[in-house]
Amino acid sequence: MFRRVVRQSKFRHVFGQAVKNDQCYDDIRVSRVTWDSAFCAVNPKFVAIIVEASGGGAFLVLPLHKTGRIDKAYPTVCGHTGPVLDIDWCPHNDQVIASGSEDCTIMVWQIPENGLVTSMSEPVVVLEGHSKRVGIITWHPTARNILLSAGCDNMIMIWNVGTGEALITLEDMHPDVIYSACWNRSGSLICTACKDKKVRVIDPRKEEIIAEKDKAHEGARPMRAIFLSDGNVFTTGFSRMSERQLALWNPQNMEEPISVHEMDTSNGVLLPFYDPDTNVVYLCGKGDSSIRYFEITDEAPYVHYLNTFTTKEPQRGMGYMTKRGLDVNKCEIARFYKLHERKCEPIIMTVPRKSDLFQDDLYPDTAGPDPALEAEEWFEGKNGEPILISLKHGYIPGKNRDLKVVKKNILDNNANVQTSCANKKLSEAKLDEVLKEIKSLRELVSSQEKRIAKLEEQLSQMDI
Image (cartoon, rainbow, N blue to C red; front, side, top):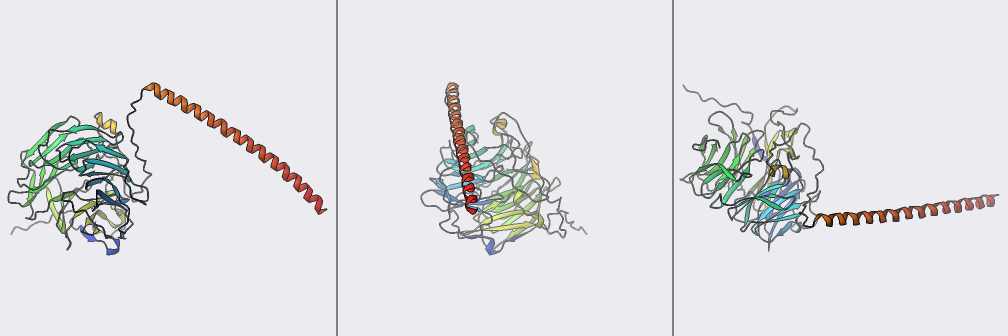
Protein backbone atom coordinates (compact mmCIF):
# COMPACT_ATOMS: atom_id res chain seq x y z
CA MET A 1 0.00 0.00 0.00
CA PHE A 2 1.28 3.49 -0.90
CA ARG A 3 0.83 5.73 2.13
CA ARG A 4 0.79 9.53 1.66
CA VAL A 5 3.42 11.19 3.83
CA VAL A 6 2.38 14.49 5.42
CA ARG A 7 5.02 17.15 4.81
CA GLN A 8 6.58 18.63 7.93
CA SER A 9 6.13 22.39 8.25
CA LYS A 10 5.89 24.72 11.21
CA PHE A 11 3.16 26.61 9.30
CA ARG A 12 0.91 23.59 8.74
CA HIS A 13 -1.31 24.57 11.66
CA VAL A 14 -1.47 28.32 11.07
CA PHE A 15 -5.01 29.42 11.80
CA GLY A 16 -6.85 32.66 11.15
CA GLN A 17 -9.16 34.40 13.57
CA ALA A 18 -11.32 37.48 13.07
CA VAL A 19 -11.26 39.91 16.00
CA LYS A 20 -14.33 40.73 18.12
CA ASN A 21 -16.80 43.32 16.82
CA ASP A 22 -15.60 46.06 19.15
CA GLN A 23 -12.09 45.81 17.65
CA CYS A 24 -13.33 46.43 14.08
CA TYR A 25 -13.58 49.84 12.38
CA ASP A 26 -17.30 50.38 11.75
CA ASP A 27 -19.47 52.63 9.59
CA ILE A 28 -16.87 53.26 6.87
CA ARG A 29 -18.11 53.83 3.32
CA VAL A 30 -15.50 51.83 1.41
CA SER A 31 -14.83 53.05 -2.13
CA ARG A 32 -16.89 51.49 -4.94
CA VAL A 33 -14.41 52.29 -7.69
CA THR A 34 -13.98 49.41 -10.13
CA TRP A 35 -10.24 49.00 -9.82
CA ASP A 36 -8.34 45.91 -8.67
CA SER A 37 -6.24 47.42 -5.91
CA ALA A 38 -6.27 46.52 -2.22
CA PHE A 39 -8.04 49.82 -1.18
CA CYS A 40 -6.34 49.53 2.20
CA ALA A 41 -2.80 50.06 3.54
CA VAL A 42 -1.57 49.48 7.10
CA ASN A 43 1.61 50.02 9.11
CA PRO A 44 2.46 49.75 12.84
CA LYS A 45 0.72 53.11 13.55
CA PHE A 46 -2.18 53.64 11.14
CA VAL A 47 -4.72 51.96 8.90
CA ALA A 48 -5.61 53.87 5.70
CA ILE A 49 -8.77 53.05 3.73
CA ILE A 50 -9.95 54.52 0.41
CA VAL A 51 -13.53 55.76 0.92
CA GLU A 52 -16.43 57.14 -1.09
CA ALA A 53 -16.13 60.90 -1.48
CA SER A 54 -18.30 63.42 -3.29
CA GLY A 55 -16.52 65.74 -5.71
CA GLY A 56 -13.09 64.14 -5.58
CA GLY A 57 -11.07 61.39 -3.98
CA ALA A 58 -10.41 60.76 -0.30
CA PHE A 59 -9.09 58.20 2.13
CA LEU A 60 -9.36 57.74 5.87
CA VAL A 61 -6.30 57.46 8.10
CA LEU A 62 -7.11 55.96 11.50
CA PRO A 63 -4.71 55.26 14.37
CA LEU A 64 -4.74 51.47 14.93
CA HIS A 65 -6.31 51.85 18.39
CA LYS A 66 -9.27 53.94 17.12
CA THR A 67 -11.65 51.00 16.74
CA GLY A 68 -15.45 51.02 16.97
CA ARG A 69 -17.84 53.24 15.06
CA ILE A 70 -16.15 55.95 13.00
CA ASP A 71 -18.04 59.24 12.93
CA LYS A 72 -19.25 60.38 9.49
CA ALA A 73 -17.54 63.74 10.15
CA TYR A 74 -14.16 62.07 10.86
CA PRO A 75 -11.44 64.00 8.95
CA THR A 76 -10.11 62.54 5.69
CA VAL A 77 -7.15 63.09 3.38
CA CYS A 78 -8.94 64.77 0.48
CA GLY A 79 -6.65 66.64 -1.91
CA HIS A 80 -7.35 64.69 -5.12
CA THR A 81 -9.94 65.91 -7.64
CA GLY A 82 -10.73 62.36 -8.85
CA PRO A 83 -11.26 59.03 -7.03
CA VAL A 84 -8.18 57.59 -5.26
CA LEU A 85 -7.15 54.24 -6.79
CA ASP A 86 -4.14 53.14 -4.75
CA ILE A 87 -2.37 54.06 -1.49
CA ASP A 88 0.93 52.90 0.01
CA TRP A 89 2.72 53.69 3.30
CA CYS A 90 6.39 54.59 3.13
CA PRO A 91 8.44 51.70 4.60
CA HIS A 92 10.98 54.15 6.08
CA ASN A 93 8.63 56.64 7.72
CA ASP A 94 5.39 55.50 9.36
CA GLN A 95 3.78 58.93 8.95
CA VAL A 96 4.27 59.29 5.17
CA ILE A 97 1.74 57.87 2.72
CA ALA A 98 1.43 58.22 -1.08
CA SER A 99 -1.80 58.12 -3.08
CA GLY A 100 -2.48 57.70 -6.82
CA SER A 101 -5.70 58.92 -8.41
CA GLU A 102 -7.89 59.16 -11.49
CA ASP A 103 -6.87 62.85 -11.67
CA CYS A 104 -3.46 61.65 -13.09
CA THR A 105 -1.48 62.85 -10.06
CA ILE A 106 0.38 61.22 -7.18
CA MET A 107 0.34 63.00 -3.84
CA VAL A 108 2.58 62.37 -0.84
CA TRP A 109 1.21 63.20 2.61
CA GLN A 110 2.74 63.59 6.08
CA ILE A 111 0.21 62.43 8.68
CA PRO A 112 0.52 64.05 12.16
CA GLU A 113 1.95 61.90 14.98
CA ASN A 114 -1.43 61.14 16.59
CA GLY A 115 -3.55 61.04 13.43
CA LEU A 116 -5.77 63.64 11.78
CA VAL A 117 -7.60 66.31 13.76
CA THR A 118 -8.93 68.17 10.70
CA SER A 119 -9.26 67.09 7.08
CA MET A 120 -6.00 67.35 5.13
CA SER A 121 -6.00 68.76 1.61
CA GLU A 122 -2.42 70.03 1.32
CA PRO A 123 0.09 67.30 0.36
CA VAL A 124 3.82 67.63 1.04
CA VAL A 125 4.46 67.16 -2.68
CA VAL A 126 2.41 66.60 -5.86
CA LEU A 127 4.01 64.43 -8.55
CA GLU A 128 2.71 65.20 -12.04
CA GLY A 129 3.75 63.39 -15.20
CA HIS A 130 1.15 60.76 -16.08
CA SER A 131 -1.38 61.60 -18.78
CA LYS A 132 -4.00 59.06 -17.61
CA ARG A 133 -5.14 57.80 -14.23
CA VAL A 134 -2.52 56.44 -11.83
CA GLY A 135 -3.57 53.00 -10.63
CA ILE A 136 -0.41 51.59 -9.01
CA ILE A 137 2.05 53.11 -6.57
CA THR A 138 4.73 51.34 -4.55
CA TRP A 139 7.68 52.62 -2.49
CA HIS A 140 11.24 51.39 -2.97
CA PRO A 141 12.04 48.79 -0.28
CA THR A 142 15.56 49.95 0.64
CA ALA A 143 16.23 53.49 -0.70
CA ARG A 144 14.76 56.57 0.93
CA ASN A 145 12.17 58.71 -0.90
CA ILE A 146 11.92 56.64 -4.11
CA LEU A 147 8.42 55.94 -5.40
CA LEU A 148 7.27 53.93 -8.43
CA SER A 149 4.00 54.75 -10.18
CA ALA A 150 2.22 53.07 -13.09
CA GLY A 151 -0.65 54.67 -14.99
CA CYS A 152 -3.25 53.78 -17.58
CA ASP A 153 -1.00 55.62 -20.07
CA ASN A 154 1.07 52.34 -19.96
CA MET A 155 4.02 54.19 -18.43
CA ILE A 156 6.06 53.47 -15.34
CA MET A 157 7.68 56.45 -13.63
CA ILE A 158 10.20 56.36 -10.79
CA TRP A 159 10.28 59.51 -8.66
CA ASN A 160 12.67 61.09 -6.22
CA VAL A 161 10.09 62.36 -3.74
CA GLY A 162 12.74 64.47 -1.97
CA THR A 163 13.09 66.70 -5.03
CA GLY A 164 9.64 66.07 -6.57
CA GLU A 165 11.12 64.93 -9.90
CA ALA A 166 10.60 61.88 -12.13
CA LEU A 167 14.12 60.57 -12.76
CA ILE A 168 13.22 57.44 -14.74
CA THR A 169 10.36 57.05 -17.25
CA LEU A 170 9.75 53.64 -18.85
CA GLU A 171 7.57 54.47 -21.84
CA ASP A 172 7.67 51.88 -24.63
CA MET A 173 7.85 48.64 -22.66
CA HIS A 174 4.13 48.01 -22.09
CA PRO A 175 1.68 48.21 -25.05
CA ASP A 176 -1.36 47.90 -22.76
CA VAL A 177 -2.62 48.50 -19.21
CA ILE A 178 -0.19 47.47 -16.44
CA TYR A 179 -1.94 45.24 -13.88
CA SER A 180 0.81 45.11 -11.26
CA ALA A 181 4.35 46.28 -10.52
CA CYS A 182 6.61 44.98 -7.75
CA TRP A 183 10.19 45.65 -6.58
CA ASN A 184 12.55 42.81 -5.73
CA ARG A 185 13.96 42.58 -2.18
CA SER A 186 16.91 44.92 -2.75
CA GLY A 187 15.01 47.21 -5.16
CA SER A 188 17.36 46.64 -8.10
CA LEU A 189 14.69 45.14 -10.41
CA ILE A 190 10.94 45.37 -10.94
CA CYS A 191 8.51 42.80 -12.31
CA THR A 192 5.27 43.74 -14.03
CA ALA A 193 2.13 42.00 -15.27
CA CYS A 194 0.41 43.56 -18.28
CA LYS A 195 -2.87 43.18 -20.16
CA ASP A 196 -0.91 41.79 -23.15
CA LYS A 197 -0.52 38.61 -20.96
CA LYS A 198 3.23 39.15 -20.54
CA VAL A 199 5.19 39.11 -17.31
CA ARG A 200 8.33 41.26 -17.57
CA VAL A 201 11.40 41.59 -15.36
CA ILE A 202 12.90 45.05 -15.86
CA ASP A 203 16.12 46.78 -14.78
CA PRO A 204 14.71 50.30 -14.33
CA ARG A 205 18.06 52.13 -14.19
CA LYS A 206 19.31 50.56 -17.43
CA GLU A 207 15.78 50.91 -18.83
CA GLU A 208 15.86 47.39 -20.31
CA ILE A 209 13.79 44.22 -20.09
CA ILE A 210 15.91 41.41 -18.62
CA ALA A 211 13.34 38.61 -18.99
CA GLU A 212 9.78 38.23 -20.19
CA LYS A 213 7.21 35.50 -20.57
CA ASP A 214 4.38 35.69 -23.10
CA LYS A 215 1.06 34.17 -21.98
CA ALA A 216 2.24 33.48 -18.44
CA HIS A 217 -1.47 32.82 -17.85
CA GLU A 218 -3.64 32.37 -20.93
CA GLY A 219 -6.89 33.78 -19.52
CA ALA A 220 -8.00 37.31 -20.38
CA ARG A 221 -8.62 38.44 -16.80
CA PRO A 222 -6.02 40.44 -14.81
CA MET A 223 -2.76 38.87 -13.62
CA ARG A 224 -0.51 39.75 -10.68
CA ALA A 225 3.25 39.23 -10.39
CA ILE A 226 5.46 39.61 -7.31
CA PHE A 227 9.12 38.95 -6.53
CA LEU A 228 10.06 36.40 -3.87
CA SER A 229 13.10 36.86 -1.63
CA ASP A 230 15.17 34.30 -3.62
CA GLY A 231 14.65 36.27 -6.85
CA ASN A 232 11.97 34.00 -8.34
CA VAL A 233 8.67 35.48 -9.57
CA PHE A 234 5.27 34.35 -8.29
CA THR A 235 2.23 35.04 -10.49
CA THR A 236 -1.54 34.68 -10.19
CA GLY A 237 -3.89 34.69 -13.17
CA PHE A 238 -6.47 32.69 -15.12
CA SER A 239 -6.29 29.72 -17.47
CA ARG A 240 -7.98 29.65 -20.86
CA MET A 241 -10.92 27.89 -19.17
CA SER A 242 -11.17 30.79 -16.63
CA GLU A 243 -9.76 28.71 -13.77
CA ARG A 244 -7.67 30.66 -11.30
CA GLN A 245 -3.99 29.72 -11.42
CA LEU A 246 -0.81 30.43 -9.53
CA ALA A 247 2.67 29.85 -10.95
CA LEU A 248 6.32 30.13 -9.97
CA TRP A 249 8.97 31.31 -12.44
CA ASN A 250 12.75 31.57 -12.56
CA PRO A 251 13.71 34.86 -14.30
CA GLN A 252 16.89 33.20 -15.62
CA ASN A 253 14.72 30.85 -17.67
CA MET A 254 11.12 31.91 -18.26
CA GLU A 255 10.38 29.26 -20.91
CA GLU A 256 8.61 26.91 -18.50
CA PRO A 257 7.26 27.64 -15.02
CA ILE A 258 8.88 25.93 -12.03
CA SER A 259 5.38 25.07 -10.83
CA VAL A 260 1.73 25.72 -11.81
CA HIS A 261 -1.36 25.10 -9.67
CA GLU A 262 -4.98 25.40 -10.72
CA MET A 263 -7.32 26.44 -7.93
CA ASP A 264 -10.99 27.10 -8.73
CA THR A 265 -13.30 28.81 -11.23
CA SER A 266 -14.14 31.99 -9.32
CA ASN A 267 -13.69 35.25 -11.24
CA GLY A 268 -12.23 37.45 -8.46
CA VAL A 269 -8.69 38.71 -9.09
CA LEU A 270 -6.23 37.12 -6.64
CA LEU A 271 -4.18 39.67 -4.68
CA PRO A 272 -0.93 38.05 -3.45
CA PHE A 273 0.67 39.17 -0.14
CA TYR A 274 4.13 37.77 0.54
CA ASP A 275 6.07 37.35 3.77
CA PRO A 276 9.79 37.14 2.86
CA ASP A 277 10.79 36.00 6.37
CA THR A 278 8.66 32.84 6.39
CA ASN A 279 8.25 32.34 2.60
CA VAL A 280 4.47 32.17 2.94
CA VAL A 281 2.21 33.66 0.25
CA TYR A 282 -1.36 34.66 1.15
CA LEU A 283 -3.89 34.92 -1.68
CA CYS A 284 -6.95 37.13 -1.15
CA GLY A 285 -9.45 37.17 -3.99
CA LYS A 286 -11.46 40.35 -4.64
CA GLY A 287 -15.05 39.37 -3.86
CA ASP A 288 -14.01 36.08 -2.21
CA SER A 289 -14.72 35.28 1.41
CA SER A 290 -11.48 33.35 1.95
CA ILE A 291 -7.72 33.78 2.35
CA ARG A 292 -5.63 30.87 1.08
CA TYR A 293 -2.02 30.48 2.11
CA PHE A 294 0.89 28.57 0.62
CA GLU A 295 4.46 27.91 1.70
CA ILE A 296 7.16 28.18 -0.95
CA THR A 297 10.20 25.90 -0.60
CA ASP A 298 13.13 24.56 -2.66
CA GLU A 299 11.68 21.06 -3.00
CA ALA A 300 8.98 19.87 -5.42
CA PRO A 301 6.18 20.79 -5.85
CA TYR A 302 7.72 24.11 -4.59
CA VAL A 303 4.35 25.72 -3.79
CA HIS A 304 2.74 23.84 -0.87
CA TYR A 305 -0.87 24.50 0.06
CA LEU A 306 -1.20 25.13 3.81
CA ASN A 307 -4.78 26.06 4.58
CA THR A 308 -7.74 28.36 3.89
CA PHE A 309 -9.30 30.89 6.24
CA THR A 310 -12.98 31.38 5.38
CA THR A 311 -15.61 33.86 6.57
CA LYS A 312 -19.20 34.50 5.52
CA GLU A 313 -18.71 38.00 4.11
CA PRO A 314 -16.89 38.72 0.80
CA GLN A 315 -13.91 41.09 0.87
CA ARG A 316 -13.86 44.41 -1.01
CA GLY A 317 -10.17 44.93 -0.35
CA MET A 318 -7.37 43.90 1.98
CA GLY A 319 -4.58 45.54 3.98
CA TYR A 320 -1.48 43.59 5.06
CA MET A 321 0.48 44.52 8.18
CA THR A 322 4.29 44.60 8.05
CA LYS A 323 6.15 42.30 10.47
CA ARG A 324 7.05 45.27 12.72
CA GLY A 325 3.38 45.73 13.65
CA LEU A 326 2.67 42.14 14.80
CA ASP A 327 2.33 40.84 18.36
CA VAL A 328 5.28 38.41 18.76
CA ASN A 329 4.06 37.34 22.23
CA LYS A 330 0.98 35.74 20.65
CA CYS A 331 2.95 34.01 17.83
CA GLU A 332 1.13 36.22 15.30
CA ILE A 333 2.79 35.75 11.88
CA ALA A 334 0.42 37.87 9.76
CA ARG A 335 -2.45 40.32 10.17
CA PHE A 336 -4.93 41.32 7.50
CA TYR A 337 -7.40 44.21 7.47
CA LYS A 338 -10.40 42.96 5.51
CA LEU A 339 -12.71 45.56 3.97
CA HIS A 340 -16.45 44.88 3.97
CA GLU A 341 -18.99 47.24 2.45
CA ARG A 342 -19.27 49.28 5.66
CA LYS A 343 -16.43 48.18 7.92
CA CYS A 344 -12.81 47.06 8.23
CA GLU A 345 -12.17 43.83 10.15
CA PRO A 346 -8.70 42.76 11.36
CA ILE A 347 -7.90 39.05 10.89
CA ILE A 348 -5.03 37.57 12.88
CA MET A 349 -2.96 34.59 11.63
CA THR A 350 -1.33 32.64 14.47
CA VAL A 351 0.95 29.60 14.83
CA PRO A 352 -0.23 27.69 17.91
CA ARG A 353 2.65 27.25 20.40
CA LYS A 354 2.56 26.28 24.07
CA SER A 355 5.76 28.06 25.08
CA ASP A 356 5.73 31.69 26.25
CA LEU A 357 9.31 32.21 25.08
CA PHE A 358 10.23 34.20 21.97
CA GLN A 359 9.96 31.90 18.92
CA ASP A 360 13.17 32.49 16.95
CA ASP A 361 12.13 30.19 14.11
CA LEU A 362 8.90 32.15 13.47
CA TYR A 363 10.57 35.56 13.71
CA PRO A 364 13.93 35.72 11.92
CA ASP A 365 15.38 39.23 11.69
CA THR A 366 13.09 41.30 9.49
CA ALA A 367 13.40 44.47 7.40
CA GLY A 368 13.47 47.50 9.70
CA PRO A 369 12.43 51.11 9.01
CA ASP A 370 15.93 52.43 8.27
CA PRO A 371 16.76 52.83 4.56
CA ALA A 372 19.96 51.22 3.30
CA LEU A 373 20.52 53.96 0.68
CA GLU A 374 19.67 57.55 -0.08
CA ALA A 375 17.72 58.22 -3.29
CA GLU A 376 20.75 59.76 -5.05
CA GLU A 377 22.92 56.69 -4.32
CA TRP A 378 20.33 54.37 -5.84
CA PHE A 379 19.94 56.46 -8.98
CA GLU A 380 23.75 56.44 -9.32
CA GLY A 381 23.69 52.62 -9.46
CA LYS A 382 24.20 51.42 -5.87
CA ASN A 383 22.13 48.58 -4.41
CA GLY A 384 21.46 47.80 -0.76
CA GLU A 385 19.83 44.88 1.01
CA PRO A 386 17.22 45.76 3.68
CA ILE A 387 18.65 46.66 7.11
CA LEU A 388 17.34 43.93 9.40
CA ILE A 389 16.08 44.28 12.99
CA SER A 390 15.21 41.70 15.65
CA LEU A 391 11.65 41.48 16.96
CA LYS A 392 12.71 39.71 20.18
CA HIS A 393 11.44 42.45 22.48
CA GLY A 394 8.70 43.63 20.12
CA TYR A 395 9.29 46.50 17.72
CA ILE A 396 9.79 49.87 19.41
CA PRO A 397 9.23 52.69 16.89
CA GLY A 398 11.86 55.44 16.72
CA LYS A 399 11.24 59.11 15.97
CA ASN A 400 10.31 59.64 12.32
CA ARG A 401 11.90 62.48 10.44
CA ASP A 402 9.69 64.94 8.61
CA LEU A 403 9.60 64.53 4.85
CA LYS A 404 11.25 67.57 3.31
CA VAL A 405 10.99 68.32 -0.39
CA VAL A 406 13.96 70.23 -1.75
CA LYS A 407 13.27 71.98 -5.03
CA LYS A 408 16.31 72.68 -7.19
CA ASN A 409 17.39 76.31 -6.73
CA ILE A 410 17.15 78.17 -10.02
CA LEU A 411 19.03 81.21 -8.64
CA ASP A 412 22.76 81.48 -9.29
CA ASN A 413 25.47 81.22 -6.63
CA ASN A 414 25.92 85.02 -6.30
CA ALA A 415 22.34 85.37 -5.17
CA ASN A 416 22.97 82.63 -2.60
CA VAL A 417 26.07 84.46 -1.31
CA GLN A 418 24.13 87.74 -1.07
CA THR A 419 21.34 85.99 0.79
CA SER A 420 23.75 84.40 3.27
CA CYS A 421 25.45 87.81 3.87
CA ALA A 422 22.06 89.42 4.47
CA ASN A 423 21.14 86.60 6.87
CA LYS A 424 24.45 87.11 8.72
CA LYS A 425 23.77 90.86 9.15
CA LEU A 426 20.24 90.12 10.37
CA SER A 427 21.51 87.64 12.99
CA GLU A 428 24.21 90.13 14.20
CA ALA A 429 21.55 92.86 14.61
CA LYS A 430 19.34 90.41 16.52
CA LEU A 431 22.25 89.49 18.83
CA ASP A 432 22.92 93.18 19.69
CA GLU A 433 19.25 93.66 20.47
CA VAL A 434 19.18 90.64 22.82
CA LEU A 435 22.38 91.76 24.61
CA LYS A 436 20.93 95.26 25.17
CA GLU A 437 17.74 93.77 26.61
CA ILE A 438 19.72 91.51 28.99
CA LYS A 439 21.76 94.54 30.16
CA SER A 440 18.66 96.65 30.86
CA LEU A 441 17.01 93.75 32.73
CA ARG A 442 20.12 93.30 34.88
CA GLU A 443 20.09 97.02 35.74
CA LEU A 444 16.38 96.78 36.61
CA VAL A 445 16.97 93.75 38.88
CA SER A 446 19.88 95.53 40.60
CA SER A 447 17.81 98.69 41.32
CA GLN A 448 14.90 96.57 42.60
CA GLU A 449 17.26 94.68 44.96
CA LYS A 450 18.47 97.99 46.40
CA ARG A 451 14.85 99.15 46.84
CA ILE A 452 13.95 95.87 48.64
CA ALA A 453 16.96 96.25 51.00
CA LYS A 454 15.88 99.83 51.85
CA LEU A 455 12.27 98.77 52.57
CA GLU A 456 13.43 95.85 54.74
CA GLU A 457 15.59 98.30 56.77
CA GLN A 458 12.56 100.60 57.30
CA LEU A 459 10.47 97.59 58.38
CA SER A 460 13.04 96.49 60.96
CA GLN A 461 13.10 100.04 62.45
CA MET A 462 9.26 99.97 62.74
CA ASP A 463 9.43 96.69 64.74
CA ILE A 464 11.72 98.42 67.22
